[in-house]
Image (cartoon, rainbow, N blue to C red):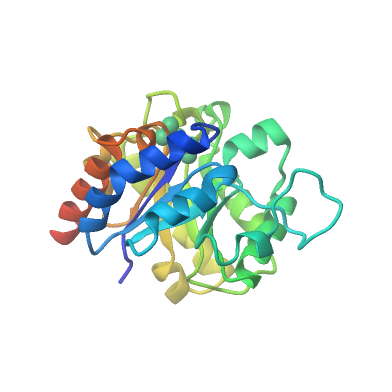
Length: 255
Ligand code: PEP
């Protein structure tokens, strides 16, 4: 039984005061929705403040990134020991980290291992670029990203994978539900080969890319898709709880 999960990636938005206000305005509505895991990922500078606001609620906290070393001369970075106890999840390998900051699958692999070593649940992002999609290379790209970023990592159900086609992120042009489902099936096949089929069936796989309250149903109504990683729409105090509550209703109906 895979528990559905909706995560909000606030990216580099909100001051500390704005993050606190956003978390406060969503807390009560999100807290009421049970049977689905709800995660918000504010900028790292706001994690402590938002964590206080979410204390004793069922809303979980996630970081947007993390370095793999525990401490030392890595100016500007945040380590797994700093996040341990503060967050439960950490987004790793987001396409913006890959594109803007040159993150490779090899670096992401070390980050995934470090997160797991410190009891954090990685939300590992994979996805193809537009030209790769158009060239029919989606499965090849995803397989390569997964194989490299999970190489040497012991099978675990504490991993969450987010399938995020790069061309769908922040563009308003989401993938269609059936295409996302097909790629997510491929992700499970890769996991089954890398690890084993039982674990592959238990790992949660999300869709991400221009998800809103208007299209979430298309994704979560697919049984292969366990939820969503939401960017822009997670910054809206009404929109994000609506995405979560629609997902809960659809999954409760057996999707
Ligand atoms: C994301 O940042 O992971 C994302 C999916 O963004 P958006 O929902 O804005 O496309």
